[in-house]
Structure formats: C-alpha cells, structure tokens
Length: 251
Image 1 (spheres, one colour):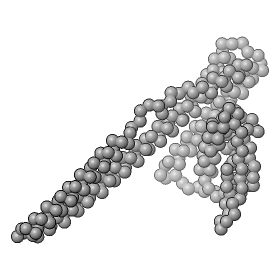
Image 2 (image 1 turned 180 degrees about the vertical axis):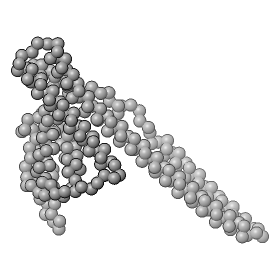
Image 3 (image 1 turned 45 degrees about the vertical axis):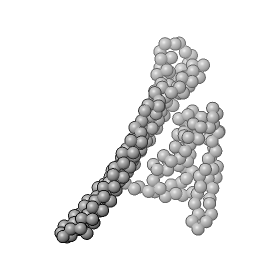
Image 4 (image 1 turned 180 degrees about the horizontal axis):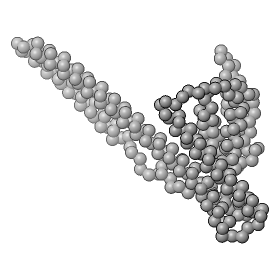
C-alpha cells in the first residue's frame, strides 16, 4: 500500500510550470525591424531622387553622381545589416524559448524521482513497515536512482553534442540492440512491464553515432508513453522500404 502511494505522489508534478510564465514576444523586434527596413528604403529612394535631380540641374554633375554612388552603397549596407540583425534577433529569441522549454522538462524530470525518493525515505523513517514493504521501497528507490542516473547521462550526452569540437564517431550498430536499450530505459523510467512496449520487425546494421540514435529513439518512446493514456501500449515496428536505396523504417 505504501509503495502504491509512493508511485501516486511521485507522479504529481513537483516543479512549477515555467512555461506558463510570460516569455519574450517576437512582435516588438519584428515590428521594429520592419519599420527600420521601410525607413531605410524610403531614405534610399529619396537620396537617389535628390542626387539624380541635382546631377541633372547642376554644373558639378560629377559630385552628385559620386555622392549618389557612395550614398546608395551605404544605404544598401545599412539595409542588409538591418535584415541580418532582425534575423539574428528572431533566432536568439527562438533559441531562448527552446532552452526555457528544455529547462521546464528537465526540472520536472529531476523533481519527480527526487520527490519519490524523499517520500520513500520519510515513510521508512516515520512508519513501521514489514520486510516485504521495506524491500518494495528499496526497489522503488533503486529505480528512482537509476532514472536520475539515466537522465544525467542524457544531459551530458546532449551537452557533448552541442560542442563545436564534438568528434564524429560513427560506427556500425545493430538497430535491434539500440532499440532494446532505449525500450528498457523507458520501461525503467516509467515502471512499465515488458508487455507495455513491444518490438517487432527485422534487424539491420546502421552506421551512425550511437548517442544520436539513442536520443532520437528515447524521445519518440518517451512521447509515446506520455501521450498513450493511463496504461500505454507502445508497439515499435521495423520494416524494410524497397527502392533505389533500401532503408529501414522504424515506426
């Protein structure tokens, strides 16, 4: 009974939903960028018209043509710089949003096993439990520690992939071996029985970085379990797709 209560309380989100907090909007930088681009275009057109008018109605035409050329080049440089700045600003805001979403997810995933561990330790400390219940609590705490260890390893792998000097260590891998490792990790993470995630289909040799494949498959399996209902049943199938270049499809 205590073990069931531990599972129940551990499934409750312990971290605040940071995604509900106000995020920086793209409306202001886009509006400012568009206004600046329009102003630069209007100034360029006005400068060209004034310079052409002055060159046609002045004795020093060389000065106006030179000013027209230099001014037009400068206006084009300013216009290109404004567009590049707007593009970089939008990319920076989108990156900040993705990082915030990532931190929201990581915070919840870290808090969940920690809350479960805390509840188990408090129960063992404050209550008198039988040997069977104590063993059940020990098993749950070990699973929570494994979940934490797995999550930390994933974070370290993701950090290594983001480094510009990350080596490209592609190797030949068995698709079944990679999928089974990912399935086992997801089973342990959500405490699922073996029949909740099934793997069927042929095996294949794939040349890729193991970290990349495991991150992709784990994310797909994680989403399938999260949105599969209270008792998810996930079926992973592999099949060969014939063509000029046969490939293995995982679905």
